[in-house]
Amino acid sequence: MALPRARFRALSWASQFLANKRPSWKCTTCRALPPNPTLSPRKFTTAATEEPKKPYYVTTPIFYVNAAPHVGHLYTMVIADILKRWRTVCGDKDAQLLTGTDEHGMKQSIDRVALAKVANMDYNYFIRTTEPAHKESVQYFWEMLSHRGYIYTSKHEGWYSVSDETFYPPSQVHKSLDPTTGRKRMVSAETGKEVEWSSETNYHFRLSAFQERLLELYKTDFITPSIYATEIVKSVSSGLPDLSISRPVERLTWGIPVPGDDTQTIYVWLDALVNYLTKAGYPFPPGQEGRLGWPADVHVVGKDIVRFHCVYWPAFLMALDLSVPRNVLVHGHWTINHEKMSKSTGNVVNPFFSLDRFGVDTMRFFLAYQGGLAGDADYDNSYIIRDYKKLLQSGIGNLVLRTIGSSKGKLHSYIVSGTSGELPTANEQDSQYEQLLRETPVKVAEHMENLNPRAALQDIMALVEQGNKYIHLSEPWKDANKAPRILFNVAESLRITGILLQPFMPTKAKELLDALRVDSTDPCKRRFSAAVFGSDADYGEGIKKTVLFPPLIVEQ
Image (cartoon, rainbow, N blue to C red; front, side, top):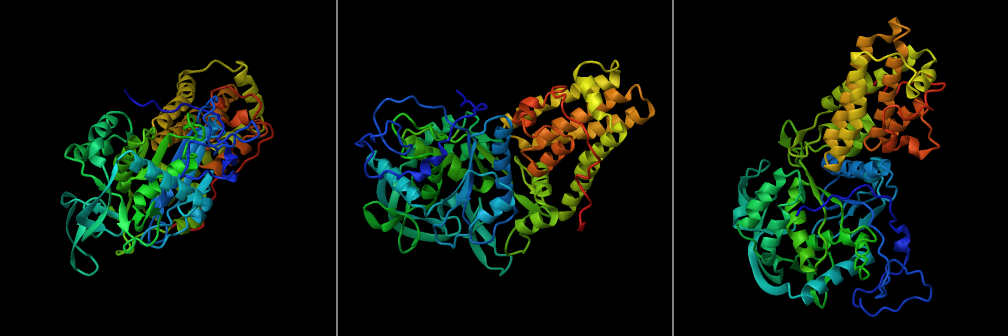
């Protein structure tokens, strides 16, 4: 039975829970009710309470690298932010977005707060794995796994990647030539990172016990796009060895100690994955798992960490009878000249430079429009300039100028006539375009429901393209009798486009709606429910020509 996708919700996140003292992970069953009958969100109780419906909850990975952020990190953030903002546009004002950074491991942590802010990411919380609340969650999670008999000690030998913080079986490593030094080395087939043979005694998780349950999970829409499920199913079907989930402190000096054993540090990926639960209030009060958002509706991840999120993570959760995430949305990588970005070749794109050079909304648009979900996408500054000129400047910007200029101050009267059914009879060309205006929001919503923001944005821009063709062929400036319907239709296309673009280009979409004088004091006027042809008679009064997309300062 397929796991249902969450529908539009407008529910409480109980955003103030972080201010409350977190309960100790060492005890979960004997907590007394506070004198105040209103329960603190993180307190435990066995009293029967009505469980509120959960908020929509989307996450990025907690980024864990040994270098500055790159455009791939920005892309993940933008996709997750679009999904969250879409829910907001649909009226779900309490939709939640979590991002953060992993500050454990054998590498120096890089703070990602600056990138999230510069990219205009509407996140609700930025989590760090060094937070006391997270440490408590991880240690409690470990204790429960151990209590249920899923953890044991054993000697482990295998190919270990310091960069990936994981062991790889022989089938997942191969020889490679270092392009910088020419040295032969063993690398991970999945990530390309160097591995070394290692032997150590540590704790293991009985991952093998979950092979069948995982294969059943993959029969649902758990992994999107489905192309990524194929390799995972093949790998899990071929055998699922138990997983080493701790490292000797000599190897991993940073991190959370194994409860009761200060000679071992909890495996970084077990630690990191639990962050999704930490923000959702884990350990959960009895019967209230979903009150703060769990299970996550969407984990947005790059294809290089699919195994961690689609094999290890659901198995950990299954071991504790916790709900698995509803979806893992996987995206491809960004390449340059169709080659993988690498520090050694010096072709890594600095997202801060790109955001500063082209503008935040321009970069958000480009990444969402051209980024690959089912495959990789190629990055080049010339592509950004091309899309800016063709799609934004000559597309949206041109349609705005032609609509306002051709209306000669009468646009509002045309809108009033159009919404009241008082316009001249539509010809075939008018009817075809009006049908497109009715269909596009529905198609966009379907794409977003199916976690395909790229297809959604492409349909929005197709509406703009057809709007420019429609006004060009209809020539409203030549026929005063036909002009009211034509200009009403293109005005509606711009209003609907502005509403639908809000998750993708928050600032520019607002500027477009402001230019059309769409009421900003009534939130309903800018929600998805208002993206219906002929549904707003109040805009268009006193509008003036506006240049939404001026020429780029640097075009090379």
